[in-house]
Length: 390
Image 1 (cartoon, one colour):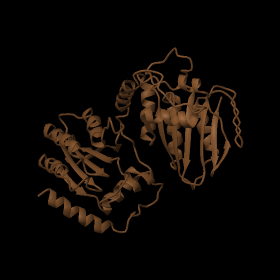
Image 2 (cartoon, one colour):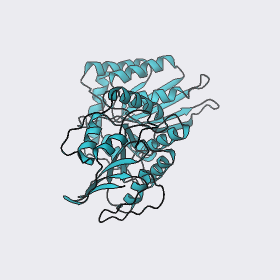
Image 3 (tube, one colour):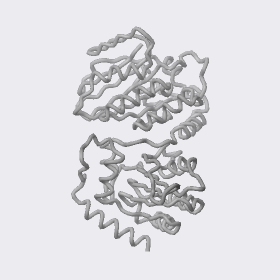
Image 4 (cartoon, helix red, strand yellow):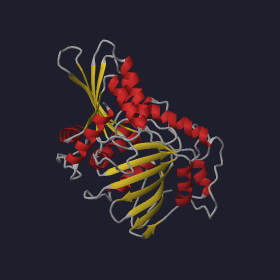
């Protein structure tokens, strides 16, 4: 079966939803459900949002034919829901439109489907994807873990479903007959925390690049900006083990992981990942380009890291100062400065252009300043930072 609710403007042109019993069996959040009826990798509710006038919503179930007007989907062999969606979605894409897609899946993608999703995102940079999974599929298997990391590197944001997401699915994808959603299994909070921790461990590796829209949205030097709750961190690591001049070692992009209850800030993500590659007989020069300066907790983590790893030097360029008026945040920056970090330099034209060239899927387009007060904002932030670090 393949269920779909398809919107064209404000008009519903196709709809199909599961019954409550089917939905419940498919979306239980127990980490292991090997013998539960309906626990195959089958259900994937898919709300799709477009920046244009149309939005569509539906639910997919693998390996069964369905043809909601005006779509025609014919399947004669086993086809996972992720592949089903990509095959259908590919036919409606427009190159001059940006799309935000959200999946709610009973299982995280298998290794094969993760590869398909990663390839799709790499070749369709006008599509962003968020995946909420009820459970992690074979999370102990290296191939499946690598699949999740590869999707993450291509920009897919993978998260675990919690109360809010289960409620949303019940309201939008289930024939619920007006009944409220109630968890029919125990330990939802405990299972959620377990799965979030497991996922964070899997996704430690950085992304390669970010999308143009993401860069313009987050890397903006207006001193005060609303709704920029995530921090994005672009990094470059150089080493001079075998020569006097630094040699590039690696680069990439980190962003906040986890939800507001169990966050892992971008700085912490980098340090956790970087710790595993350090060698005591090698010196490292690390450069960060961040959308926000570090919060007090992250500033403390970085300062402690630099104090115990004297073979690492760090330069931080920040697009904006995070709570620059708050004494605790100011003290964090001063502590970082005392530990030898060149903190914090403010990003200017040269740094924005470098990040655009190095860390953005720019398709050969030049970076264009996204506000007409970049120089004025830069001078204001530099003055403020000098006051903090005196």
